Length: 223
Image 1 (cartoon, rainbow, N blue to C red):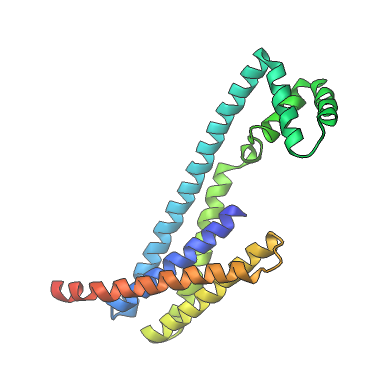
Image 2 (image 1 turned 45 degrees about the vertical axis):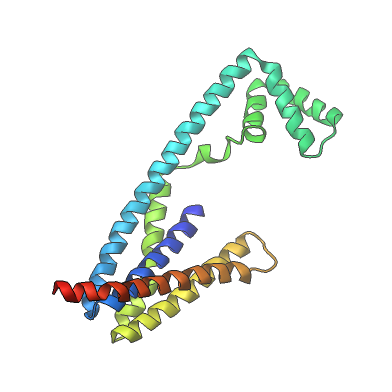
């Protein structure tokens, strides 16, 4: 889910920014579309590769930490038990109840270590992540997000009309992504997440358009 939300959000914002920026600097809509397509392809590959390398590096670091924790546990088993007992106390158990839980887990050294890795060191969650799947999901999500502003720009004739439709679709999609994220998080006021995503989208598009206007004289001078 992290890769889906991040990829879609970045695809929408990046493409909307490219369309807004180039629409202010380039008069030919075809050139704007080609640049947006090139940006989409490069962004999808970059984001996919980044997600793959990031997940793989994270797993390697965590695997190293797990190995170190297991070596320490072999030489200092009571330190692991004491650390787990302290964590259980922080989470609301009395020391007596926590001690009984630790004693029960200690009958299975592997289970004790796995519980300590999760509760004390926080190493369990991302160890199961699939680097290749993360990369593919991120890249596909980026492309899906990029199509949101790009399709209206292609379908609506005229640069200004296409840009307005693209920005409208961008705003609606970003609000939807934010609302969906709030729904997943079970927030009472899910619209706030939508408004936050929407604000970012409008700010990025406005900044891109202004930058395009500022650099347009450079293109005229070069021509």
